[in-house]
Length: 371
Image (cartoon, rainbow, N blue to C red):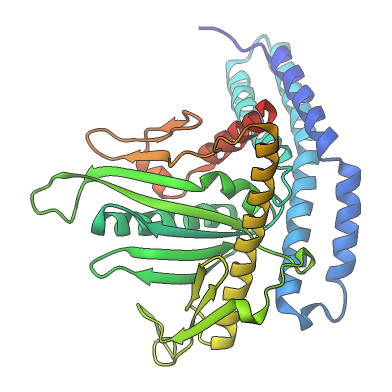
């Protein structure tokens, strides 16, 4: 049985940490924390609840990032001490096993932190708005859309990220036609943007009385949440607003008043529906915010396309089908861009998707470098 070369591993850990610190400069993080702390202590902070939540969330995330960077150095020092103790004791097997376990944990946390340094896109630091739509496959596709919604919400819950479901459109028999939700934490867009694309599910359909295998599809859209400084202004005459009664499960006055809002951007045809708030005013504000976010992303895409056209390179960055979830005749989830795959499909649908996100971010970075 081969033994771990702890000296080489620890040197590699320190090198990786140094490269991370070069990007996530602790001095810059300290300055950002001081700035956000000053804003968070303002007496009128909660006069604007949404702005207050953004400030406190950003402060918490920045403090957590600084803590991770600083604590990892101490953890590497502790690992080195543990290895020295085991060596002094003549190669104590129990202590070496503990060191091996610590090494694996530190490596995993360093890898996750290293991925954060790759999120340097214009909108990567933003919160995210995610929309899931059922595609081809009938009732199975609607059920798949609901499975994906739960997967992403469970992922956010695992990390302690606050979310808000903005809109749900239920299918007639089961599942969802579409759903839109926010992930209210910095860098949510940077992480989840690699999930955008077509997802495919292969399984024995629970809705087929003959037990046949069914292939169904769902589309995932991820956009950055706009900020007031983005200057995405939409003239009133370019927006058509329809109000209607909310549908699907609900309580109180959600389904009894015309509180739901459908907002159409006439020049582009983009449609946004919001129905999960009781107030028409709240739904209208949420719809406008998501519409502005989609227009912002569209503007960025048009600018990038123009740059690529000038460079003579107009190939698409994303294929129509980016991931397959196979439940029959074998169990596997595989990303078709990165080749990252997992055999535990139940864990993936329960929100264990960090491996796919990290592989996707690294893959996207390699594509950007190549281009």
